[in-house]
Image 1 (cartoon, rainbow, N blue to C red):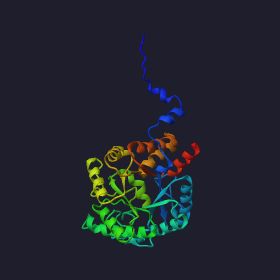
Image 2: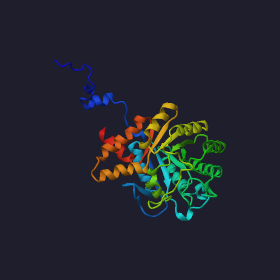
Image 3: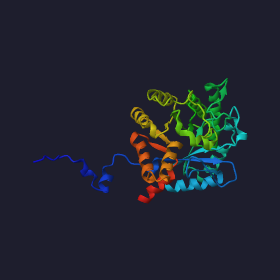
Image 4: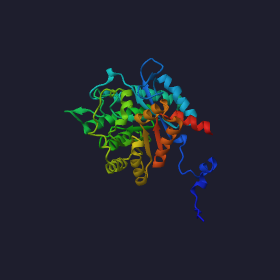
Length: 332
């Protein structure tokens, strides 16, 4: 007589109610942060090539999107400016103009929504430089120390406009400590720093760079002298430790799904919130494949985001935030 096992793990999979009771990880609307693009033009919106269904809005129309996000239970938005070419310079002076596009947007959001939804804004120069780099170029090199004072000025105008979280995404060494000192010295002690401590030199950023005008699909830009080598994990841990020591409040790992091992390693090692970014290329691949009928979008987008949670991410930047939040609401 064949001996059958006493332990049958499949018993816990016999119904949805059992699956719900025994699931180890879950994705919540509270985990989602919505990236948004804003422009200074007159059109109601501009479609973004390479990011299906994602649009760039003028400030007035952006507010209705934020209202929708708030009503769905999304807690924060991350803003990215599409800057006119005429405002781009070698030293990115528009980045610290207190009346620039992103500062004007933040003030309008705070006027409309107060503290009902959080506002996150990048501290980086790539939307404002002619070259599209995250720092200023001197003698053909990205100048680390000369870039940091500009980043501090940018962080200060963002904080003054009402930004809740400034997010240095430039990968210059030492900028977290400098920005924290600048904020504290100007009575912005309550403004958080979300450090893009681990921003890999990835090919998955192309649709985003095209959207903000720092690079086109027909050209590329080499950021390998300051962004992290995608073969390295130990170096990522050093980057995180350094930024924690410099008083970062939250750490970002970017991109997301190709670097789940890095998210897991960071979550296991550090007692600080780890955020992840499902970047433009990740989102675009899933969206494009689903539009071809090769994948079922609702399932794969949820599965991909849950993998971030399983790896240890606390919250996730995703262009699918509205769609996923609506799906979650429908299932309640």
